[in-house]
Image 1 (cartoon, one colour):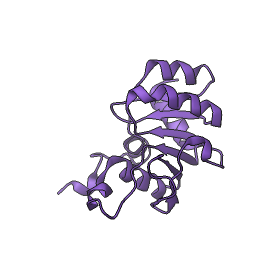
Image 2: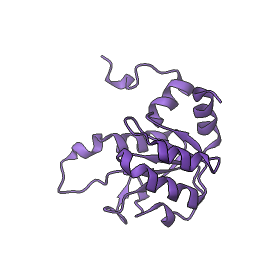
Image 3: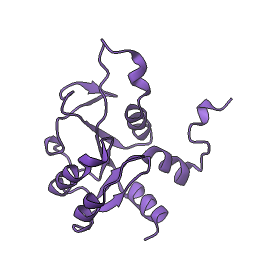
Image 4: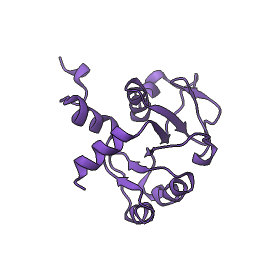
Length: 155
């Protein structure tokens, strides 16, 4: 399947996203964290109807954008369609193993993240692999036909 067709099908058929590596908003930290890519992408996908479960072992139990952060993928009690990753490429193999365990349909690695071994792992279980792409930007490009990616920043 061509990459655009795979991405579009994945986004159309999905309702829930586990977002690994979402940063929590701590009071003692500057409000700049609200502009971190993971928090922007999480909020955006929620606005377009996706349920997004944040995953971050260092912030488990805290809330972000109305959702409680869980420590690991196996802590999620609902079916997950997409596991979207904001972690270094070297961690993708370990996360891919967890993706299989929870039965997710797609493994999505954000910009700058890719891992051939993780790709082999998930594709061997018929799980879609999308790498080096921003889920928010792909949604905008394929469904909203929006360009530039952050139109609100355009003057």
